[in-house]
Image 1 (cartoon, helix red, strand yellow):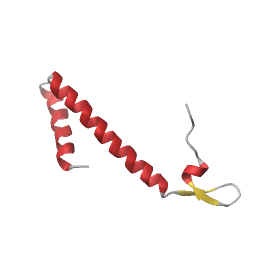
Image 2 (cartoon, helix red, strand yellow):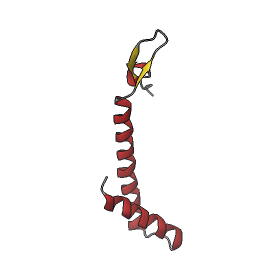
Image 3 (cartoon, rainbow, N blue to C red):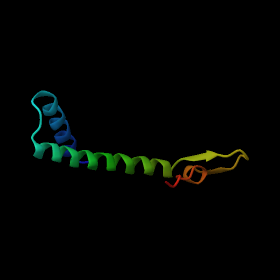
Image 4 (cartoon, helix red, strand yellow):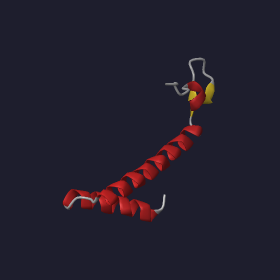
Length: 72
């Protein structure tokens, strides 16, 4: 993630605590948080792609095969 995005998130968080945010700043903060969380989720998914687990039979399988996402 770009350093300036993270810096802006921190600026808005500090301003929110001290003087409050305008509606435009609140919208910007929400948009930036969405970008930030999307990046975190992508990094986590990439990490899980590289994780393997040993099942009860001793077979090593990719994490996502051993624990598939539940629908719904």
